[in-house]
Amino acid sequence: MDIQSRYETEKEKEAEGKMNADVVIAGAGPAASTVAGITASEGLRVIVLEKEKEIGRSPCAGYVGSMDFPDISGRVIQSKINRMTTFFPSGRHLTSPLNGFNVNRNLFDKELAVTASRQGARFYMNSEVVGFIEKEDGYSGIQTRDGKRIKAKILVGADGASSIISRLLGFNNDVATAVQYEISNCRMDPETNEVYFDTGYAPGCYAWIFPTGRDSVRVGLGIRHHLAEKSALDYLNAFIEEHPIASKKLKNALKVRLIAGIIPVGGLRKRIYQDNIVMIEDSAGMTDPVTGAGIGYSMLAGKIAAKAIVEAIKGNDLSRLKRYEQGFRRVMERHYEKSLKKRELMDSLTDNKSLEQNLPRIWVAFKEYWREVG
Ligand SMILES: Cc1cc2nc3c(=O)[nH]c(=O)nc-3n(C[C@H](O)[C@H](O)[C@H](O)COP(=O)(O)OP(=O)(O)OC[C@H]3O[C@@H](n4cnc5c(N)ncnc54)[C@H](O)[C@@H]3O)c2cc1C
Image (cartoon, rainbow, N blue to C red; front, top):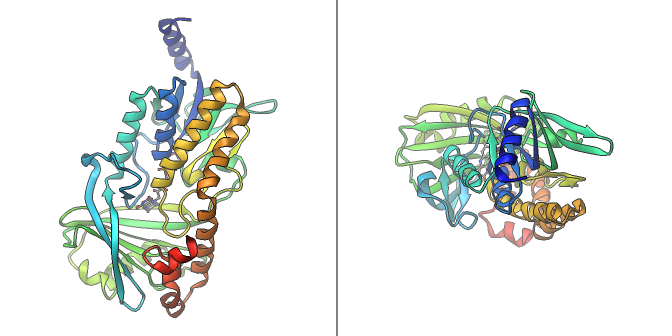
């Protein structure tokens, strides 16, 4: 079939709500666009389904390391970050070097999607994945709420922390809840990200103040529900109004946007692929269980997954998907095992005295942390 006829056939199928692809991806975040771009550039037919009407709506504080994104576009950078200041519960603090950017997640995700679409991937907005298309011995595609039925050889769950793909496969998430304000009218050092540890403000997690320009910041925190006595938003308002150090810096703050989300903290799933289904980043538990960072891992996992997907489809051998699981675990498994131990320790530090003593063991700014994690 020539390209024009194939295009027309696909258009007809699209109109009927029935489409075929080599790879169909749930979600259009960084993990999805990474996989979509690489696989499409290898000639595979790739469809990406996003439930929102717009790409880049995921809640995020927007910090990315410069090593993970050496080619980042200036358009998405809000602040170049050179330092991190970590505050203990007592108020003493440590300032350490940090090399990265606070980015506008909305633009960041859109740029990745534009790149993937230039490489040939097709994106559909307002297309919430609600289930699989079943076949005798597994799944042959994905269905959306608006009636699309996309048959594909390989299905990818890149649908974030509340992933339906991972839930349909029976995986549960252990999560932290996070809330964040974008704030204007607030003068902070634009090159320093600040993090605050205090069981009275962010039980089981931490609070952050990340600059996004000369007079704007993102202020947020996470909590572990089983350690909390009130809602995450109540903790955040208290942090802004009452924290002995942060409240002074945020005195004239104008809150312009509130967002909330969940962060997987249970570490890497036991399986990150099953038959013809691949899970990636948040949906596979790849977010760091202590820092909550996930964007960098989505790039790494995306590249390894894409290579395995291309090999599986071109070689007509789905068993080659195991190279994704093997490849990712080879590089990252020990890191997650150790980070998970840090998460368990962090969950056990329920009073400020023990948090003060143990903070250097659980937080990335301290050499004690790296001595244990390696
Ligand atoms: C408050 C907060 C702050 C954070 N700050 C940072 C930070 O500073 N740095 C960092 O590295 N990480 C941070 N993270 C984590 C980071 O946001 C995630 O790890 C990262 O976005 C995961 O990428 P992803 O591609 O797996 O999922 P997402 O970026 O969440 O993308 C998933 C996409 O799937 C879509 N989707 C969901 N369900 C469906 C469905 N059923 N059908 C179709 N589409 C669907 C979503 O709308 C979304 O667009 C933060 C998280 C939170 C909640």
